[in-house]
Amino acid sequence: MSPKNNPVMVLEKVCKRFGGVVAADDVSFELEPGQIRGLIGPNGSGKSTTLNLISGICDVEPGIILLDGEDITKKAIHERARMGIARTFQHPRLLSRCDIKTNLFLGHDLGNMRRASGASQEIDQSVDELLDVAGLKIGMDDSIKTLSYGQQKLLEIIRAILTKPKVFLLDEPAAGINTREMDRIRALIAIAIRNKAAVLLVEHSMDLVMSLCDIITVLNFGCVIAEGVPAEIQGNEAVIEAYLGRRRHA
Amino acid sequence: MTLQRKIFGLVLLLLLALALTLPFTVSNYMLRVCNMTMITYMCVVSLFVIFGMAGQISFAQAGFWGVGAYISAILTVKLHVSALVALLASGLGTAAFAAILGLALFRLHGHYFGFATIGVVMILNGLFQNWKPVTGGADGIANIPPFAIGSLEFASETSLFYLIAVAVIIISIATYVIYRSSLGRAFMAIRDNEIAAKCMGVNCYQTKVIAFAISGLYCGIAGSLFAFVSSYISATSFTFMQSSLYLVMLMLGGYHSLPGPIVGTALLMMLPEWFRFLQEYILLIYGLGVMLLMVVMPDGLIGGGKQALESYRNKRKGVANVAQK
Ligand SMILES: Nc1ncnc2c1ncn2[C@@H]1O[C@H](COP(=O)(O)OP(=O)(O)OP(=O)(O)O)[C@@H](O)[C@H]1O
Ligand SMILES: [Mg+2]
Image (cartoon, rainbow over all chains, first blue to last red):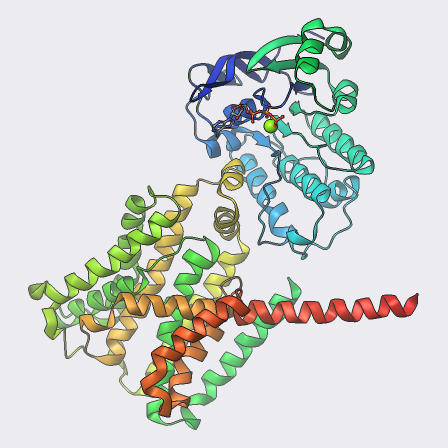
């Protein structure tokens, strides 16, 4: 990787336990603006948990998370969002009883709030442009229920981009979508990168991860078992072991 | 939302036209019913804000209505404050009361908040009933002077009608503005997906308190107007039963959109007048109606109507598509 070492986010020995299950065990890595870090690992290895720890949905215990050098480990979810952490979910979390416009405006509202406090600038793209890139030909007044699963995932990504995040967490954006939508997701991530976001991409599709990511972290049972550029990870013994040991479709 | 806008505009226009002409066309008694309907509507809109928009079910609304009524009654009867000041005090006082209550109760999550509000309306009712030196106990407070702005007195049913209509229009427009604002979106985000709301920077706790305070404001104003309209208040009006009625009205009209409260309130307030001969069975009919409604039209009349319209359109589209092939 290119060690610019100007990270916007730092995780230092972050841990999380659910009863007896260790979901995150001394997880450490850094995110840099304009870079994509892949976070992969078998089912239940703690990928979603790591995103939850960063966005504040789960409490870190123990460990430290820094954003722009500031310790955010104890901050509430909405405070972190206002500081520039945006995310999507493994299963899209949209406002199910609202129309598409309202869902997008919600992202706009946070963007405005961040701009008003001087924390961010206007993004270069308009909502129409983003919808175009996503290939979403939808009526703004349509209900969320009219969207397909893939369209919901795309809309959720656009909603996050509208906040102009510093850190953008994506949880399996490509799961359950078709190949055409896959390209749309690539294009949207590219836009987030152009807006200087640091992207953390959780994904099972090796195709997407290997082609998009600048650097990859591999988790197994909550532990980081490997870190490196895609070529290194593809040949890594421990990674192959982890995936083959608990076989799964990629 | 062009359809919604059209419907809302239409309803508002109708209401306005009605407001201008009603006092000349109906009896004094009917006018009193209309006044009470508008007052009830304000409380139902308050429930639309806290439940319809923010998704937090509340049975406290009739209690807030009472707080507003008692504030105005006590201020004017015992302290001889002017009516206009009393009205403002009722609105702001009840809003503040709701906000403080919200700060405590929104520590609870999900249904527990709703349960707690049942306690609120019961405690308030007990307070109205028993705190004799302040609320007059079971005797209530009588001889509330008519509403007045300076020397302009609103004593007749007709003048009260216009006064309340103005309040109704202001509250309706305010609610519409909130509905379209970032605050309204924050409410709806909390209702639909609290985690998503938080991740989009919404301070859910604070936002719920704001929604509750706004609902308190509406009920407080409605309560004050109720005190001036009836010139006598007692604890028997401000009950859990009344709160439940608000909920039924909201569910009947539909709690997803603004016209819902108008339709629901108007129907449930007017029906007993039209079906006088069924008076003994009215509660039974309500009960059966609510159960039927939840099965057949869970989104209320407005929601159900919209759905019917949409499926009719889709059917026509479908027919057109088939015809093309
Ligand atoms: N809220 C929770 N309560 C209890 N256990 C949890 C919770 N969230 C996650 N876990 C457990 O933590 C472990 C890691 O789960 P996590 O969802 O982070 O895995 P993942 O890597 O995202 O898996 P997948 O690829 O299936 O999405 C699992 O054993 C899971 O059962
Ligand atoms: Mg997961």
